[in-house]
Image (cartoon, rainbow, N blue to C red; front, side):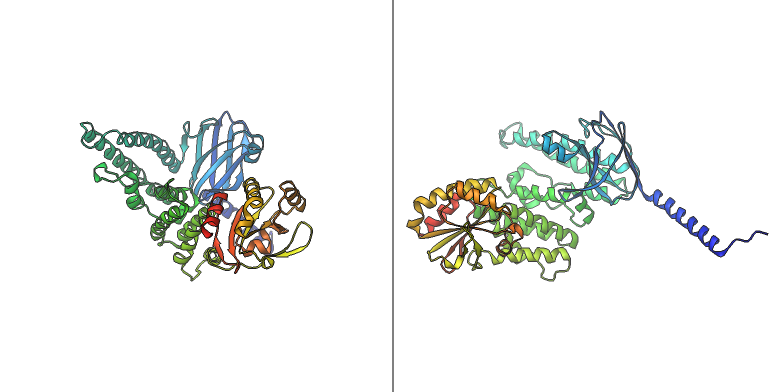
Length: 469
């Protein structure tokens, strides 16, 4: 008789359970195989979308022209396959080949060409990608045709003999586009591709309405759009839709103030559309803030802070957004700025409160910033010729972490105003107090240290000074 110990039995049971779990995981994982004719590199990267941003996710196993990602469990969403190292491409000014595709809970097999991956794409296995690439190719054709037809409206009035046929074809083409998308997602039960294609539906523009397409889209563009699927955050779909909508509110003839007021109208409409899902709401809020930060549209940012934060801070992301927007409110026109106490180029302590002039221009800049160097040069010329007649001093704060680079720029440009440096750069106390996120940044303050203007350019600064005097 053979005796088997209790420990041995337990180990065998554990191994059986382990292998069973391993098999189940492999069954649920996605096996991804992509054959690329003419593949020029063994460096292949999988990047995941978060809005319009791409984040590195994985590297591939490459055998000749075959790319493999095996037994992985990636979150469902849109991904980009990048063939070649993007950093090397930027360094050596060469191109990399890339294309987007959907990863869901199905195995994927694709075949394409390195030089034109989307146009030459053949989907061997993956119903989601079959629909996705069908949509991409159809969309290119649709946009080309619709753009050409809408362009003809410039030349044909509604009194022209050709106009009824033109109007009919414009309406027919748009309806055909929506019908095509509906027919595509009707035949599948996969959530992501359904949400993606539904999101691409558009209103039908009728030239007989008497509205320009821009005005029509302001009122109707977001009507068919469903913002209730947080899965779409793992794609650029939401970001692209918002950018498209904001484009209807841009006008090159607007002043900065007029453009910001126009965008505020658009922001209110967008935020009303995304209130039904907290994750989408936070994502859109963050996307808008980052965008308007980039273009230094503070009036829009303050409006968002005043009107589109619940104040309840239900999520960590909303807490962060709230902190950022409160900072904008604190640095808006009319607010009193905090004192700045730093060292000048001679290592002497200087303070903002020591200045006795009627006005002071605080400018944050850096030696490595090309826009800063151009502005500093123009401002220095103006300062030497005109500053005295306006009773104004300039208090310049460098955020260079290299003191030598800063000192060299001060010397080369012969900067005669008050020069200081924030040695900790973006992370320094002064940078944080002034909510600094871009260079150059200017604050024009009066003797009470109240902000009277926040010019973005040399021209805006000169106009603000002339208006004050």
